[in-house]
Amino acid sequence: MDILLIAGLWLDGSAWDDVVPELTALGHRPVPLVLPGQGDGNTLATLDDQLAAVLAAVDAAPGKPLVVGHSAASTLAWLAADARPEKVAGVALIGGFPAADGRAYADFFAIEGGVMPFPGWGPFEGADSADLDQEARHRFASAAVPVPEGVARGAVRLTDERRFDVPVVVVCPEFTPSQAKEWIAAGESADLARVSRLEYVDLDSGHWPMVTRPRELARVLAEAASA
Image 1 (cartoon, rainbow, N blue to C red):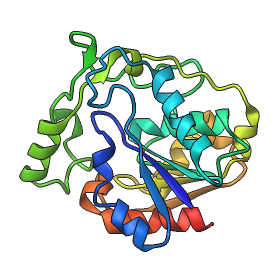
Image 2: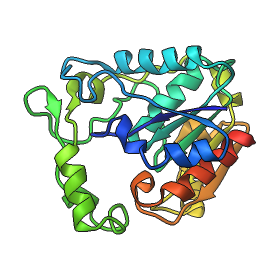
Image 3: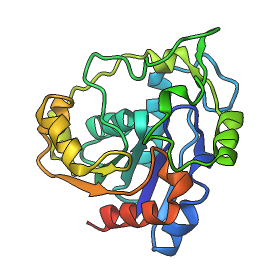
């Protein structure tokens, strides 16, 4: 099966470099996506531009792909399920919940000069980054791609309730499945509360398992694709 891989904020397709060979060895076809505004110099890219690129990959897949979204890109994966419910086999959300209809995609940090730069490690101290050593942190920060304002502040639009019939796997890295269930029950994600087939998978890692646990993450995604 094709597995479309969408990295979170400040990352591009290379974030999946250690996951790709593992998924290939497990019999799948991983497709890391590089979206407009992710290192191509296009600081004017919008959320609609990025969604169009994801949908183009969905449409190009020979069968129904599994769409994987990491962190904030969980919203992009869910938008793909909303726009192509009949073409998406399932969605895997790694360390994130999709933003609600009408909300901004990822307006989390300050915008400077039309982009949202990586804010440093301060906001991510604790469970998020506990398994990243200093070298890994330096590599991440050095390669971080500022997020265009039109992406970060783009409005999420969900229109097709058939999305709730698309199977969803919530991959829980820096939090537990029990915590995720509690948050969803408390209203953290009204959409996920309505998904007809929702599963949770525990993954012992920080927020970036593609860096620190690529083999384990690949196995989780392969199982989701096989299901």
